[in-house]
Structure formats: C-alpha cells, structure tokens
Amino acid sequence: MGWSSFKNFLKLPPESLIARPAMEWGFPVAAPEGSGKRRISGVAMLIAVMMIALMMLFAADSIVSSQVDLQLAVIQRDRIRAEYVAKSGFNLATFLLSADLAKDLTLGSTPALAKLGLGDMNIRLWELLNQLPPIGGEDVEMLQGFAQAFGLTGIVDSGVTEQLKAIEGSFSVKVSDEHQKIDVNYCSSGAREPCAAVRAMLTALFSCPAEKAFLSKKRLTPMELSARIQDWVDPDSRTESESGFSDESDPYSRRKKPFKAKNGPIDSINELKMIEGWDEEVHAVFAPYLTAYPIWKKREDRGRINLNSAPRELLQCLFQDAGPDRFKKLAQMLKLRESDFKDLAGKDKPMDQIIADLFGYNKNDSATGNQADPNNKASWFGKISQTYRISVTAMSGDTTRDLEAVVERTVPDGAATGANLSSRSSYRILYWRFL
Image 1 (cartoon, rainbow, N blue to C red):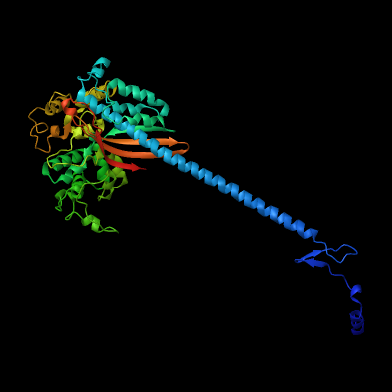
Image 2 (image 1 turned 45 degrees about the vertical axis):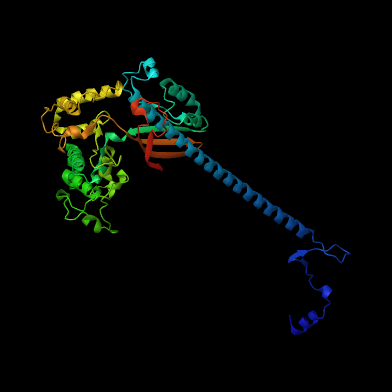
C-alpha cells in the first residue's frame, strides 16, 4: 500500500473499520441488536462455574479434614483406653502376686484352702497369667469367683475386678521372676562380702565354655568383664586390678562425649551397655540372666538367686564342676518343677544340704561351707522371690500399648501373725514405664 492509499484509509468512517467486540471485565461480550446495553450472560455463567468449583473444593477439604480429625480422635480414644486396659492388666498381675503371697503366708491355716485340697500345692498363682490368652472384660466373673474361693478378697483393693469389667479391649500379661537372675546392684552397697559373691557369680556365668569362647573373640576375659561391672556399680573410686585399666573412668574419658564411672546402682540392666566392652552382642547373650532389682537396702543384705525358679542354663554355668550325671538329674527335677510344680529347694531342708545333694558336694566343701566365703555357692541361693517384672500388652481397636513394671511384694500388716489381711500395701513399684 502506497502513501496515498494509506491516507485514504485513514479517512474512512469508523463504521467501515473492523468492529471490535465489546468488553466486560476483560472478557468479550455481545450486545443484542437494537439495544445499547451489552449482554453479560457469559460472564455470569463463568463466575457461577468458578464459584461452584470453589465450593466443591471447600467441601472436599472440609470432608477430608473431618475424616482426619475423626481418625485422630479415634486413635487418641483408643490410646487412652489401651493405657487403662494395660493398667488393668497390671492390677490383675499384682492381684495374683498378692494372692500367691497370701497363699504362702497362710498355707494350712485358711479354711478355704483346706476345703479345696490345696494344702500341699506348690503352684505359683501368677504363673497362670503366662499361659492365658488375651483377657477382656467378659473374663472378670471367673476372677471374682477365684478370689472368693481362695478367701483372698481382703489382701488387695476390692475395686480391681470391678474396674476390669469396664474395660473395652483386651490385654495379655507376662510375669517373670527377677530373683531368678543375678542382681548386679548388690555391689553398690559398699559391703565387701555381697559384692564379692556377685563377682563370683558373674565370673562363673561368663566362664561357661560357649560364653567364654564368645568373650575371647571380643578380647575379653570373664574376670575382666565382671571387674568392670563392679567398678561401674560400687561406690568407691578404687579400680579392680582385673579390669585391665589403671583408673575406673579411664576408658570413658576417651570417648567422644567423655564421662565418668557411675559408682552407684544402675537404674536398668540396659545401662550396662555404657560399660567398656559391653556391646549389643554381649548384652543379648548375658542380659537375660542379670537384673538391677531389687536395689540393696542394708549393707549385710545379699542378692540371692531363687533356686526354685532359676533357669537351667544359669544353674549349669554356676555349677560347671557338677558333672554330666548331676545335670541329667537336675534336668529331670526341673521337668518336675515345670509339670508338677515341685520345688528344687524344700522349705525345711537347709540350703547347704540342698546344694550338696543336687550337685554332689560334700557338706564340708568350700561350695557349701563358710557362709561368709563369696565362693560358697550355698550362700548364692535362696528359696523365695519377692521381686517380679510385669509386662502387659494392651489392645484397643487398632492401638497397642506396652507397659513394663517391676514390683516388690511386701508383707501386709498383721499377716505374719495370722491376723486379718486387711492391708492394701502388698507390693511397691520399683520401675514403671509405658513403652
């Protein structure tokens, strides 16, 4: 197009130019013929669609949020419920532990026991829990009948079984005897004889053939490991010569975060992992035979193992010199202990005679002689247990809670004299934790 043609184009009237569409909010709209107003129905439709989409998004978000909040509320409800179900399982375990204590204290003098023919029965009532399936509220009537039949309703809180009726869920309970293990905390008393006996037991445990070979691969000796445990627990700062160190805190001061030997009772057996040489593998092998409970009370107290509940593996390590024939006899007696609840150590026979009969010692041997001698194996053992570990797994809905506790049985006021067993202080809690 030339310059003249372009000038003629500019002179054309606006109507002859290409019509531009009417605009509304940036969107093209059409105006009806013969009307000066513009139609905006297209914009209204678009706005309506946008608003509906926003409302749908808001509704979807509200539904999702409500479902999440509901699920969180259900989880929280089941968590609280499972916690109280676990406490109910703990109450049941302490009830049977107290009932077992009452049976031992009143055996032969309670009419209810005599009528049931349980005068010579050695069954430990709390062991029944280890054989039961998960328990719910529908099983409580059986427990109430059990308590009434044995005449044991006065030794514990009468509201325990009533609380069990209200539980909505189930629980399983495992009770284990802490007195069937070596209590390392008796080295924290500061008394020489109890700690020396514990050292002798630990050294014997670590000296079993397989265990000794296992420690040898880790360049540890039984005496070395037992000495390090004593250095960690005993209250003095004197280093045991067998530990391999010139100072108790020497191996710990060289760590990335240095610290000193505790020189006090351990709070849990897991604390042994802090000791030099005691790693996860060592812990897995020996921890099942060690305990931190009960913590000593008097300097003259001894951490005795209950011969009637000690596991076979521990007894074999502590009596390595007994010989295969004696272990064969021991295995038969342990089988009777499990099937017929027959104790290894009777109530009337002295412990030195029991050890001599079981493991073939002469009565004047060092193994059964002087009670003050730490190597006197008769002084390592007792016949009763008072400390127990209670493990409860509680289920409510899809939620599971685990409770771990250690309790020590105590004699209620007046029980030893045959008075009415009305005291509720039949146990005290040494350890309590929800896992």
